[in-house]
Image (cartoon, rainbow, N blue to C red):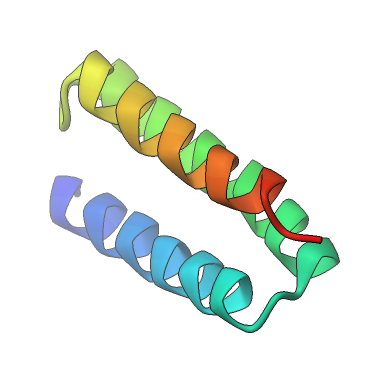
Length: 68
């Protein structure tokens, strides 16, 4: 169960990073919401630590915000 959740979140993060790299702000914004949800659920269940989820979310949000 945890492995499936981790895989789903990693895939979503890769898609988000691809959208950021291609400067697709609308797509990246939509994916960011999904990634934040996945990371929060992983932290809540104890699969990853709370600060790990917070750090990843923060860094990804910062990258999305820098898109023009």
